[in-house]
Length: 530
Image 1 (tube, helix red, strand yellow):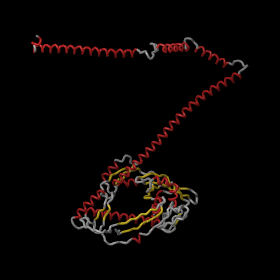
Image 2: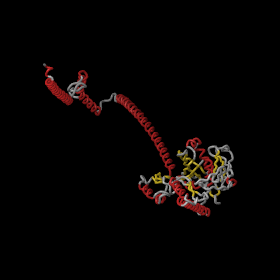
Image 3: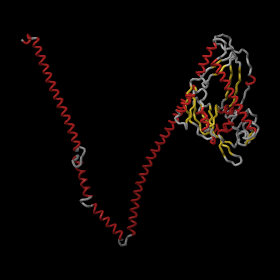
Image 4: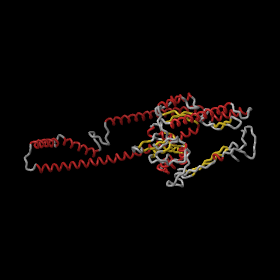
């Protein structure tokens, strides 16, 4: 089987030390040994097209972690020149100007900046034209395709509509095989819903840029953040004034990883260090040569800046529903937003996105549970530490009390030695009188000592006899408990008396029944009794 369009292969080194080979081809001009004409056989092009020479060339780029290593020379073919990425701090701009910031952005107010804006407007206009042509092709495929020119086109119309509703398949609308690929993002897809996502809170000055990498988090962790930083630093130009920092790394569904980085730039004049704004860093990384290097060496699929949205941007986003979303559903989603300050309604298109959100929710739940386990463990350790500290505090209190008594004894001995040979002073005589009064009051028979002796005797009596009315023990019941016991026993006795009366009445009834049966039997069989 031969393919009509062959775009060749591309081989390049990567951060992970293996070669990446990609090949693409379109097989609309395929032919086989047997040709069978069916009712829905789309027309094929039997002529072969040769694009192998133009796009089949190899592009070889030595990876940072491949066989060349860090100390070897790296040769890379740039789309914007042959100088490579290891440039000096003063780099030549893509549009002919120079910049000393380490990034080749055109300065504002120059002809290069105006040219850059014109190119952006041209690119936006081209995208709008492509979107309009795709929408026209979709409408043609769903309403009036001209594939056969007979009644089979009506069947093709219905089939294209079903594919558009499902959001998958190809919709043919011309005899030459022109078609439109239906995706879940098309306007007519029915499997759409509206969910909510958290609004970013980071500022542009923080310089955070998130990159989605087609590798597992375990693989990225095994490589190490320092090697990733070095690889990105080389791709961004390798300037000594720049430093790449990896802020976070988290796992994503489908074995992907989200890497959040920021770049610090040191001024050559003052030595001050600042973070490159996220918008500036993202704009630089969107250049085609930088994107190609990031994709080949680090397997970066997409790159987005983490910048908080302004109120005007949020208002513009909420003003009109996204493409293919019913305005009524969009308005209902805006009204049902549980927290408009932190959440933003976003469309969910297709089952794949729903599955991704489910996986993200499961991963976030696992992260929350892990965080709760860490907090629980920390709380347990804190409680244990608190108990240990409390015991130490009690121990130190006891030691303080013992030390205080020892100090008091020492002070007393010192005071006695100091007062030896001196007459009693008036304040000492007053203290002696007060102490004697306290001693007399304590030892009075009818006061504290008498009460203590009485309590001691009652305790001994309670221990030997098991209790007394004056001091109830374990075998002694008070008056209220005795009344409860008497009432319970009285009810039990009344119940027994009622049961005895019922039994007596039942026995009397049984005796009466026996007598009646005996008399009836005697009347029916009189000879038996004779």
